[in-house]
Length: 258
Picture 1 (cartoon, rainbow, N blue to C red):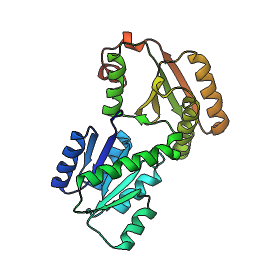
Picture 2 (cartoon, helix red, strand yellow):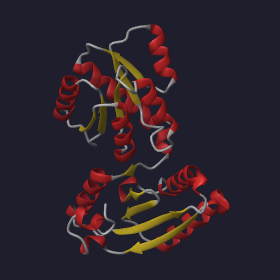
Picture 3 (cartoon, rainbow, N blue to C red):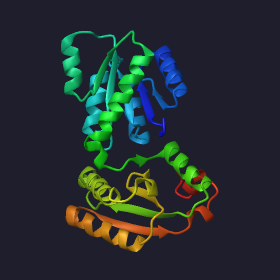
Picture 4 (cartoon, helix red, strand yellow):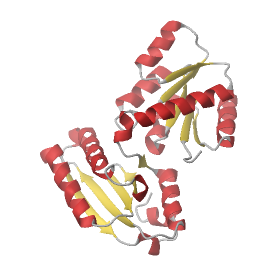
């Protein structure tokens, strides 16, 4: 696999969680685990996995409720979902697809079949609307990306972007507008020349290997203002030659108390 895809497994059965994680790690996936729906939603928001394998029958918050919460959140709405469940009733399958499931696998399952379904969902996902938005890295995933670029010993710069929102009622709308705006600009460039991280609720770090940063920032500010109006504003700082100032991603992120 050229890219190490990131899978989040949400299941309240420890044995299933361990077996699935082991199998996927052996097949070169990066795996995140959550033992209940609430933790699963939090992990999905923080880590932005490429795909989620979700159990339906869980206490307190079942898989249908988790799926709805993920699809209602703009930051996780486009992540493909595979339901993993013991339920076989047709109405449950229909309900699963109605809340946004991409696939449905019945327990007991075959690991090879699950892996094939994951690959199929990821392939379909890459062709869908989700490809129109840049992925946002956070926490350990962001630190991993920074470390990888530092290890490459190449020149790269960082653009610190603060999304300023005067009225808290507009937070979700303005954040969504920002992500759509920056994605539309970045996706016109080579994907390997940048990655975007989120370190606080309204603070983003954009790492780049392209030039003409001032022109890029001006285009971003102008496009954002055009789409957002007076609901939000951007404050941008350019940090040059990051690889010469920090030895690790952890050291860089520490300045933001991440």
